[in-house]
Image (cartoon, rainbow, N blue to C red; front, side):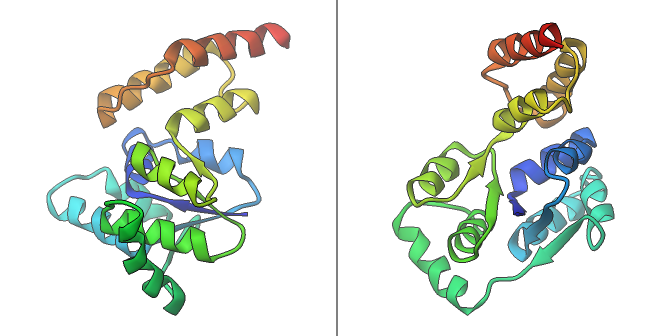
Length: 176
């Protein structure tokens, strides 16, 4: 399986320095970012945001940069018909729509809905946290709460399903 990271997930994991979570969840997968996502991260670096150094340190080794092929460039423009997206988001959708065995990690609700509508498998942040609990990557309520607090504080993302995630980790711990 190949995993494509949208800018929002890549920047969140960089800010909290927890790429290990997705690497443990998908140990036999290859991870990619499109050139457009790399460019968005580069812009953040130029504006003085140091968190991008985390993902840049993984490039080439754990995460590879991929460019659009001819079909994806053509599809890139057609994607405007299914919704308004940023450049990185359009690149992610084009790649996942045209290449076999690619899944998308994005925390953008609009991107996720439209991607699912056209048959792309998408995981958002809460999906990944839930999966991490189920797979034993997150092992305790304290660990989960600390991780959610870091996400909300450092990335300014509100985790809507906190109660569900906490009840899930409690059930997993009790089931052990």
